Amino acid sequence: MITSRQIRAARALLDWSQQQLADKAIVSLNAVARLEKGIVDSRTSTLLAIQKALAKAGIEFLDADQKGEGVRLKSPRS
Image 1 (tube, one colour):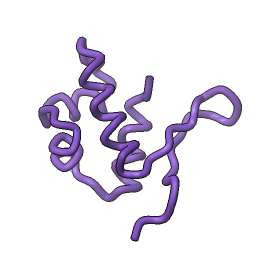
Image 2 (cartoon, helix red, strand yellow):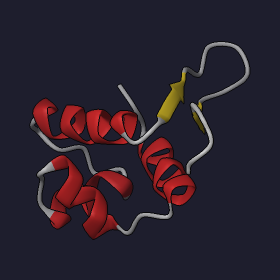
Image 3 (tube, helix red, strand yellow):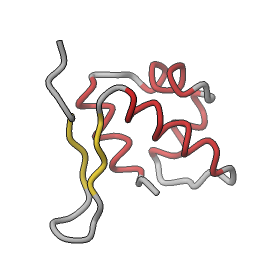
Image 4 (spheres, helix red, strand yellow):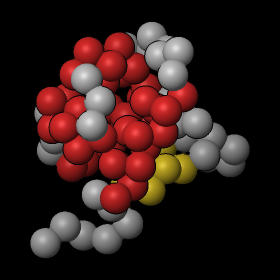
């Protein structure tokens, strides 16, 4: 699963507000804000919807296994 830091970093790379992410993921603004603060939502579906929306926008999530968790853009935005 992605972390709150990865969500914030991905939003920053895309230059999205929390509201924009909520709209793209079809979740509430409150859910995005809570997840970014590290308050775990009881519904895994919310986190998966956010992850899917960010991935669709070109974000690649890097696991914490070797060099630490992170995010990057798969390709430059046009």
